[in-house]
Length: 233
Image (cartoon, rainbow, N blue to C red; front, side, top):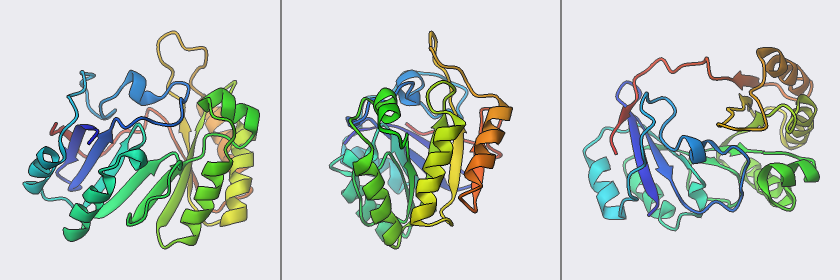
């Protein structure tokens, strides 16, 4: 088990489980490399050692949970994820997988799949991977399933520009133009060669994406949660 961090929102009855499973991609500026704890916490502490499965379930047993998010490095490659899904299914908890789409996981209620890039050389520059075809095919598989599917991409000026966001939106529209799509603002790390996008660049990317899709939103650092987040591990 590679869960090293957990947070809980009492108002939402929502748990976030952060996985440190070895991600097959090496994305530039991955937030878990520079801020491994929940970004909604004020603390920027050191991660805990990974929990054993029975330890994790022991903590979760005593909490009222309506919704759980699996996120972090890449939770879909953790061999214990299916056991966790069985645990939450028995509790009738809504399960959400935040993933890069490298693997297709059954038994989850909702999937947020991050499409890094569509253009092969941009995908390689961003992730170190050879091409995005595996992820795009898995996106189509999820779209044909009963899972609630949404997509997201990160806008990185100088790497993933609004034009690439438009290409991604066009791809998504070919699968289903009703799939919600969120454009996230890149968060630079110390010494980064890339910067955060301006609000104007985010709005431009949104306008381009909306030419193809019905539901497009943007997310930037000034957007704050309206509910409390507590660290429980």
